[in-house]
Length: 296
Ligand SMILES: [Fe+2]
Image 1: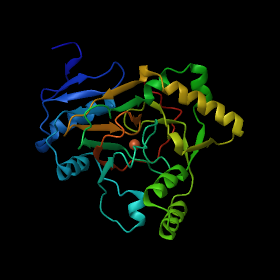
Image 2: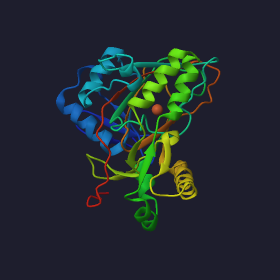
Image 3: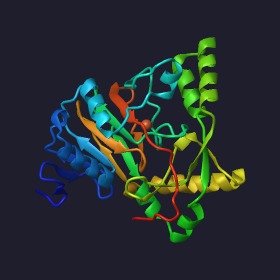
């Protein structure tokens, strides 16, 4: 046992995967989690921000059942618009004809008023080489800023919209009157929304950058030049490897991450090999910034 393996609970062990965030959970039988073990996993998630389970032993149904332990699995906005009422489960496959488009730092669907709380992703087809996923700790990225910069950005609001999502979805669905109609409906159903640039984590009280990547349009109350400059700086800041961890997938691996304190991206170096992942997310709350709460 090395110093990076720690007993988190009498039932699970954690093996840290980087110095900043991420831990592999050892010894958890995900199909038969009692409340005590689930509580330990939940606590480990809050502390490590991303958890990994090698060879999880889950199928789609069991993955969704596990998502239910964290809250209400989400109905994806586009599917809701198309009439879906039950929780959504997505198998995302990319290959020669559909390169992966999630290869930039982002948090999922920040263009909704209440972005997800937790995401669960399980590897299906794993390419022979490449196709890792990376996560970044937005609590650590915030903490690493100078007190002056922290003071400058705390309380700022950022406008997020779904234009980049619509462009990508329209490309995938193909140009047709039906696609145009659906995309216009999506635009109407989910108008631009404002979120704090620094959010207070509702469970830990820690402060984190809320980073939506291409979903972020501008910082409210700033000129375009001011907003661009500040967002570019923060974008470069969070790209530093000291805030990251990385996971090399094997088939059946499961990752669970806290969407409220992390960003993620696919490392798109497997193209044109095939890669598939099975994904569901759990509903979150409206992000907020509490100036009185600064637990660190
Ligand atoms: Fe994503």
